[in-house]
Amino acid sequence: MTETEATEAPSIVAHLKRDANGKPFLQGSKCAACSHTFVGEREICARCYARDAMAPVALSESGKLYAYTIVHRSFPGVETPFIDIIADLDDGSHIKGILKDVPAELDNLKFDMPVRIDYREVVPPGSNEKYLAYFFVPDAA
Amino acid sequence: MSDVYVVGIDMIKFGRYPDRTVPGLAAEAALLALDDAGLTIDQMQALYCGNLGQANNMVGQRMLAEIGQTGIPVVNVANACATGATAFRDAWMSIKAGVFDMVLAVGVEQMGKGLLGGGGGGVSTEGVLGSGTMPTMFAQIGVEHSREYGTTFEQFAKVSVKNHHHSTMNAKSMYRIETPLEEVMNAEMISYPNTKLMCSVNVDGSAAAVLASEATARKLGLMDRAVKVRASEMSSNPFAERQLAMPDFSAATRLAAKSAYESAGVGPDDIDLVELHDCFATAEIVHYENLGLCADGEAGSFIDAGETALGGKVPVNVSGGLLSKGHPLGATGIANIYEVSTHLRGEAGERQVKGARMGLTHVVGGGPGMGTACAIHILEKA
Image (cartoon, rainbow over all chains, first blue to last red; front, side):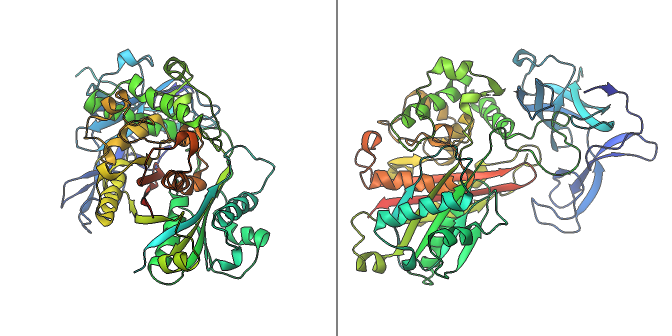
């Protein structure tokens, strides 16, 4: 998998979008009734069942590591090992991603360590095209 | 409403049968279950057939084409890892509702090797936005338990040591090999903390049960070996805080467990043995707590103390579990009812849980972006 800086490649997943200036962001939805923030677009709240209370938001780009695993075996053609994490973003949403820029060793992983989103273009396994994706990197802050 | 009894139940030896067909595997289990009860296919008033891999291919009807086309209603069921248990519950409900007196439930699956969890259209996000494999999903659930309670890699690994040991006493298990702790921990790491020996085995298999109303079981003289269904409960995933990032199997299990204990009028202390969904070693640990077998946070010390081994307070997965007996998705939910029934009948031989009067079975399945299906049955010696 090769990486380059984000330009105009298509997004790999529906909840990753670009704004009018081409800047990537993660699309979320916030329920005005119960305040839960969801990843992705939706119209009805799965948590409190409210209708017409959902508003689109751009998700936070920083958060904390909630849980992790080091993936040593994946599907054929997928490079391993890599660190798969569940992050709690600062806006209360939760998202899975790969933690980059850290060797895939348990000693480097701490619960609640600060992480931030980093958008990168990659060629996914099994594809020949570049796609815009998001990753996590440790956040010094 | 009539009480419902299992009057015949059996399973084939789980293994790899690439040269056989799905209806053929189903037929073998169906005939075994009928023979167990001394009944014939023309006595069955309906068939509930669970299968995932050929869910749109009418496996139930094709099975009847092999063993007898009596024209009965057939319901083909697919519900992730709860498929077999859902077919069994549908069968149970039909008798409970008074629609039928005696019906057949079958679960069957033919599987390839390799990791589960892929699929879906479009560009793969595997290795880009994380991993969607089943081992990874259940690794995260284990690490979450470690985060909350300090559960260790070694404690998770002990589940595999135990279930592999149990399987050495089960002739119907895929594997029957002892795996010492060091071997489990040093096996190929798949997704930390689950090594290869801490992942369930993809196998082919089938299991079947004949269910009857109390009046029918008595009329046919089948009460001697009958097993009473004290509770049959299901749930789907209620909203869980992190569900979009990590599928939740615990909340659904807790919901179904609460309903099952309530409808049976019993508690976890009344249960003599449990067959629970050990798709991964980490899963068994969290389900000890989800099913109330121990208090929250105590699952690690529970396995350390041997409470869930044969001879312990509440033996869990004495069959060898999904980890060693194998996990043919659609068959698993009836196979674990077979295991508990065999103990309640006092016919489990070397692995018999002594004096077992009541047992619980649990399956829960699903995946990222899909949801969860959970089924729990409480069974009692009739």
